[in-house]
Structures are given as structure tokens and as C-alpha cells.
Image 1 (cartoon, rainbow, N blue to C red):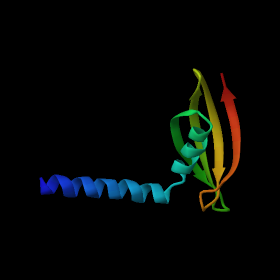
Image 2 (image 1 turned 120 degrees about the vertical axis):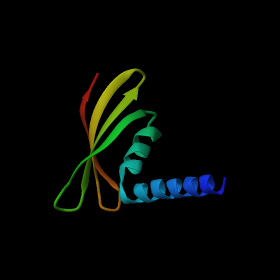
Image 3 (image 1 turned 45 degrees about the vertical axis):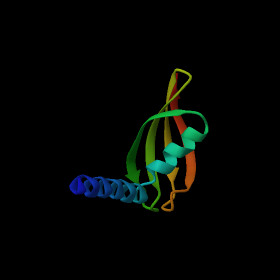
Image 4 (image 1 turned 180 degrees about the vertical axis):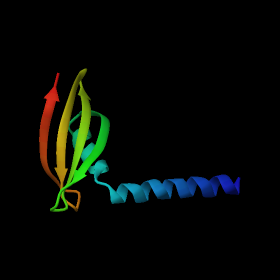
Length: 86
């Protein structure tokens, strides 16, 4: 039982650490606050300026869409560009 508790603690800590290193949680939050269901957030590239680009797939009332989101190194959303929607 102790081993299971320690394992669960380590797993939760590693997930928390991974989220602190990535801005994908911030991007996902941005879309969820607007009522979208986020299907996929993928890191695409890091720009020379340190900004990061993510590709996001969302669903809203049955319609799918894809967006490109640029974040600052501090995870501030700088730009959201819709790639396509149906």
C-alpha cells in the first residue's frame, strides 16, 4: 500500500512538473473558457524569440476546428489564428 501511495505521488508530481515546463495547459484553458471542447494540443515549434507555437484541435457544438496559438516564454497567449473550421 505504501508503494502504491509513493508511486501515485511521484506520478502526480511528474505531471505537475511537465505542465510547468509546457504552455499547453494555458492554451487548453484559453479554449475551454470560451466553451470549446479541446481535442488535441500539440507543440509545433519554438521560434527564435523564444515564443512557442501550438496546434489546437477543438470541437464546438459538433463543428471541428483547428487553430494555431503563439505563446510567450511566460505562457502568455500572444496570437490565436484559426486555420480551418467546419
